[in-house]
Length: 161
Length: 161
Image (cartoon, rainbow over the protein chains, first blue to last red):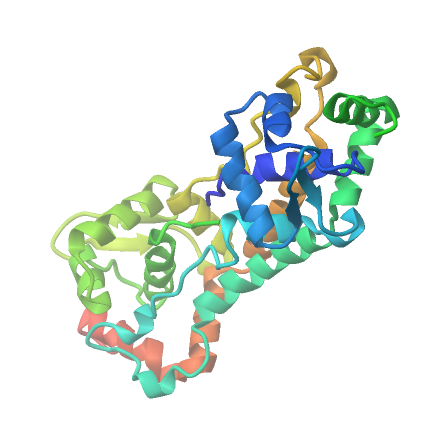
């Protein structure tokens, strides 16, 4: 199973955006993460299309979270960047071949698809249960409260953020 | 998140193989599923490499499950065909840029990776909890007990399988 590498960048950006009360320019986020601005712009645009961040125009413009980080789940970010579709796609194999099940008898999902999708639901439920605020708190616990404060000061040029 | 389409074919083949006490030729499995023999061969070879099925040579040769379907989990099949690696790959973004965390301070996984991998563990646990025998039973429940018996008779040319 493969996930878009953009999810990792998008999650890091969201955590970083929790530190600042001001919009953060995309170029500043790219510089902080030492990544190409055009690559990061794609992930930021995906987050913006999903309504998780918004762009503020003007001299002090940039990106900001649209709502409290407690209300943005990791699943929201994954769906924004990687799409909401299932990883397992059922192509109705049971309807193929000489012993095909007639379409009229296939009103419910195939038992194999049901099993695969139930597991994906467990994965989605786990991601829905973690917020961007949870991640920021875990970074604080791991790196100490000065780590995100240092990021905030660097992003805004102002220790009060 | 994307999963190899081969997983679906491999799961259907495993369920079908529970019906027969004799090896089933790969060409017969491809015909049953109305799919290219060369495409299905790839999935069968992946299952064989993982030790879930084995090839029996000779006139009555073909593929058979190597062990009881109660002991083959859906996760075994997914790992065989799609690989055992994580969907989320951590590239240690925290170690990049002007505020990089020193490698010496990154002995544990990044909080973001931990969250993503915990969700994947929930997914794997769900798939590990379902066996090929469970899937075959669910097909029986959905399609009636004659469905897999019909498959067995068709595969082997013998209603006693």
